[in-house]
Image: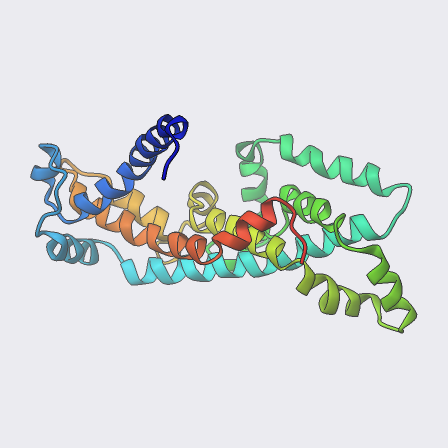
Length: 268
């Protein structure tokens, strides 16, 4: 039985939950209605889902954009996890007097706005002939100071005695990383995977700059392309937003437990 003193708390949480989930419910409702019903403020689901999907497929290369987004996001996630975890592990395990100074310089990069580096990066990638390539998309994202800091902070909870025992048993440093550190830090990898995948999937500014070819667009760019003309079809746009949101929701719901453990620094 709920205690009386907790009733205001549950009421507040219920109201806050409704407010938080309302945009998602409205997106689903809008994806099933036409633009006239949406303009009138209709909140109930309609019968125009199939029509909105046909219009979206007819006007935009949905399959190509979805495939590109998966290729970009998965590639960035795998490479970023490997490089950043290796860097964070090295910064924490191997001690050197210059290590902290180098790490402090690395963290300064977090203070530089992304837009300040767009023009130099575009010129650099243009000269390297990396425009409209997968490598050009994920190269600036495969190593971020935030991810390196996250792995380093969580690596502090990794038992040092295990490393010393493994070295005495003759296990190499690479073997310690892959056979001991990697399985032990599963929750950290899961949290980093969720963050990296969502950032890569929802990336818009850098792909818009580097992907000048229409064949290289991702889902976020596809949705932006649907907003134009004299008449905006909100139903079609919301259908595209729904398709764009489903993969990130699946990834988060599958890894939400590990995500919470990884953010709090849990080690198993």
